Image: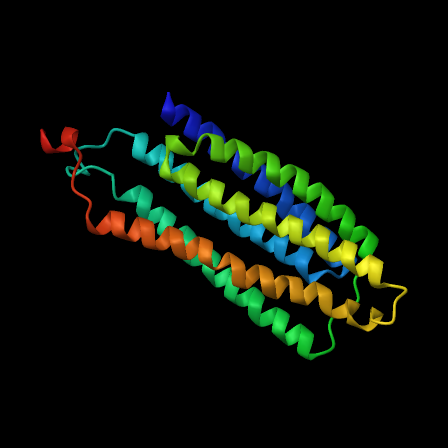
Length: 220
């Protein structure tokens, strides 16, 4: 039962990430928002990682004791470690890009459009993250998915708060900082989110190092 739920949840994550990958990248390009583009690219990475997790989950469920006499217990944490490494690379790239953007004068963003995306993203991401967190006990894959969607939810919160702030500053004496808000949000998000994949890598790395075959495998 737990394996069936895991597969269904991973499929939900894959489908939603696919929608966000398309919408985020297109919306980010149209609004000239580095933050939304980062969200879209993150969704692409999330989609790829979710697909790998789904395939890994299906492979672990498959009976294949002849080829894997010591079981497949190491596959799950190994895949999660790969997820963590890829997300870390994305965060570092985003940090580098945001610093470059701020040093070159920031970015002019279509604030109303960007805020609309932020609200849309926040509602959907929170709903998916809630479902994943509620069912995270079913699999380490689901725990990793919950962590990814938490990152996307917090990213959406940052988008909403940042662009509301930018709109409020438009008619003030400090309106000159508005072009820097978008890349600055990306910088903060990248720095903060680095902790999530690092935690995943540490936890699953320790699990791999101390892992022994399960009782069923040992009795073969």
